[in-house]
Length: 213
Image (cartoon, rainbow, N blue to C red; front, top):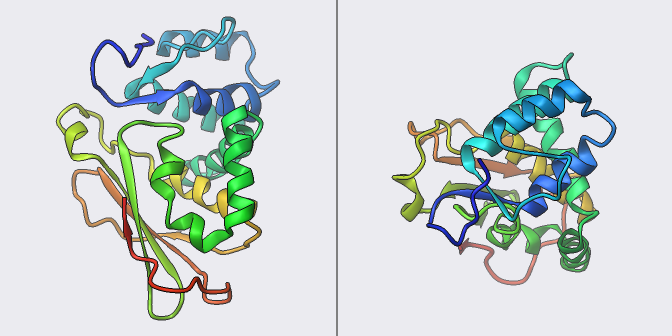
């Protein structure tokens, strides 16, 4: 069921992310049966969205939406494409418009150095760190914050393919066509994933890009 963050500290998805996903990316695709399934997950799209939803609700919603929108695609590709469309939909929200304006001003390299800010507009339990590699590519690691690890019982705690879609679409907002690749996982718990953005042809920022956020 929806849970307001004021009750207790636990991993949640904020309404801006759910709005971008359900009211924009899935607009016109949620029939009565889909709405019934969402309600069983704890999301009532017939009413205004609440401020936050538990992680289990988010993960279930992502699974359902990927199956509904991309039934012909393999699961990983469907989640990737859903991540792209969700971020695109997020851009229609007031917070998303502000973020997109910042992204267009900053450009892709600087934006990759502030990915924690990006993720925390939609979820409260993840951080990111970015590092520029010798060849000019940028590696981004997204991980669950330590204080939330004990509260996450679903594995993986992050959807790596959905996140890859978010990063890819954000690069396009920044004006870059960089390819974003999900690297082989090193965290057996599924609470940390790394990505490589092929940025060798993009202009470099002055100074090192290494950031832990």
